[in-house]
Amino acid sequence: MKKYLFLCLLVLLSGCARISDIIHNDTSKAPVSKTEEETTKKTVVCIGDNEENITLEVKGDAIQSMKQVSFLTFDEMGISISDDMDKNKIQDSINQSLQDKYKDLKGVSVTGTLMDSKVEITTTINFKEANFDELVDAGLLSKGTKGNHVVSLKKTMKAYKADGYACKVSS
Image 1 (cartoon, rainbow, N blue to C red):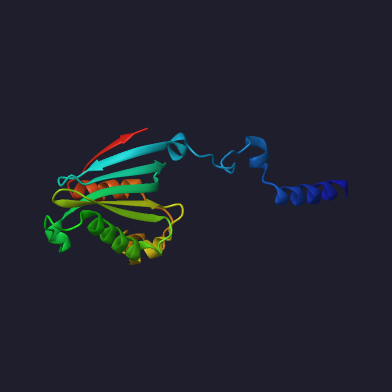
Image 2 (image 1 turned 180 degrees about the vertical axis):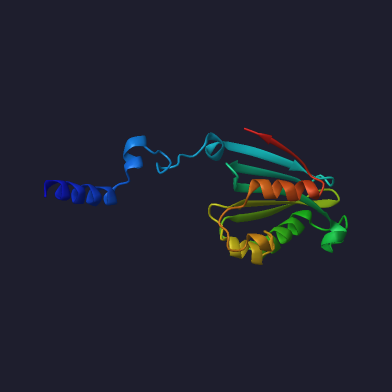
């Protein structure tokens, strides 16, 4: 009878815990800690053929923020400027137009600066604050990003390089 009771107790206990887990101290089920690469902050600068430059602040593979400086000629913007026009009013008008277009997007700021024969447009996006679906709808992110909550550095750099940008990573 004692052997039968001992055997039942052993079967009951082995059902609660696998013996191999007790003997081998299995660490595969321990919480996974983030690698240094996943937590290291980096800056990536990509420069295009047309003086356009993009600065990305990155943590691991996730882009945290982006600053893009691009240029449009007056012709591309449909603006004709003569010497007698007030350039401050024109710049204010450009900035008001940009603000009206992007004012409802959280985490996005856009400014325009009037230069000799072109307008410098600076777009800054804080991806920690922004709504990704709204960025896609506004044309600031590709459709593949819709529904995501992270912009991948690897995918972004691959796309920029395919478009002819030269990118450099620094820490």
